[in-house]
Amino acid sequence: MKRFFTLTLLLIISICATAQKTQVVAHRGYWDTPNNAQNSITALKTAQAIPVYGSEFDVNMTSDGVMVVSHGPKLEEIPDVQKASYKEVQKVRLKNGEKVPTLKQYLKQGKKG
Picture 1: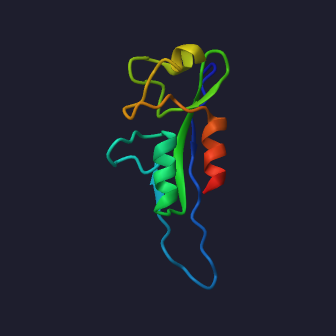
Picture 2 (picture 1 turned 180 degrees about the vertical axis):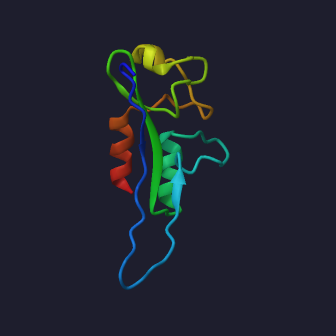
């Protein structure tokens, strides 16, 4: 599929030789909280505050080559983010009012956790 990059980045649970315990991985951040939205920077920060072992998220590339964090090609009123420009995607507001984060912005926050 042309220009289609759906990357599901899932942190793999490690099993230590000395301690085998279940690790929790947040799904699209910890977004099922008031004033939050899946795949938002706030959802990632909320997941980091719990803390969880990791956070899964999805990445799509816009028609002009910008990687954005978005589950699947449909994004709010945009039917296919992969056919939309980054400028169009930046007009979209997530349910918590945030702009759709770029992969770079999301990874920058991820390093803080």
